[in-house]
Length: 366
Image 1 (tube, rainbow, N blue to C red):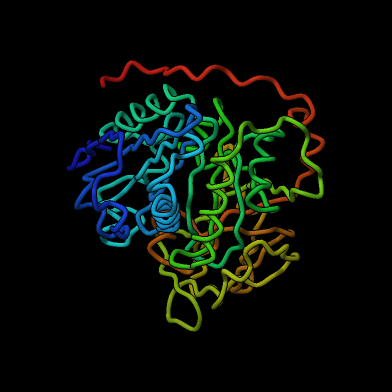
Image 2 (cartoon, rainbow, N blue to C red):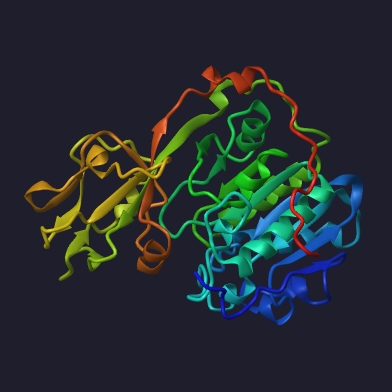
């Protein structure tokens, strides 16, 4: 892939610019031309890192930050320093996940497979800045375009990571794909979470995420004591499901080559028995869905049956992030498949080794 036509511009600030907290996500581009890191000092020096708007149409994180800072923290000191990373303001202007010429920001972090160096070099430099601050934890706030419960996602099964996740929700997803996410790249150095806060614009999502950030800012430390098994219901993301790009698809009774059920996103976080219908196939010469496991292997036949003009799951599965948004499906995926796991059997939960010192590892230019 060649370099993008527009090089992302990274900005660092030690204050919130005048008028920024009055801006909705769609207006941030007027103040912040590209990815921006704002460092606000608090009573405890070691900061909490919070990322918002990596996807421009996922606005709950920014709304939570706005409300948090416009409360008493406009006048009172923060209990802990705060690093705010604001991602894709250009896509937010148009209420899109990303613009057509951009890669997915949350696939550009170190360890990913994104090949656009115009972006990956900038994101490695930002990552190095994060490490220099030695954050207590990294919280990346997202929304879903489909119907999902609020849940947290982790990249390592450790008691401190699970404890931080359980403060947000009892449902926790463990994922190793996709690569290049912020939480995955930071998880080697500090407890790192992705928060999925329902659909953008829902007041409950803003309330929940703001209250969670407030609680994290008041933490003196994150306990290493094992989490009670009843406090966390842990699921492992085992496969990514995409729609065959050569097929036209839609939802409901539509004249397309694949017609998925209306309300397909109601399946999210439901354990679907074998043979559950997902839709109908009007073109039989190619598989409508492609399932890829965490090692990149095609496992479509393991999970799906396309006989008799129907899309059905071949074994019991639990989907997450099912969406009805065609653009998001084309840019990312239809859903992920999960399986329940017993985290208390994992050695790192009972024997937690210290994390390495966060030292920048790249020699990218400043």
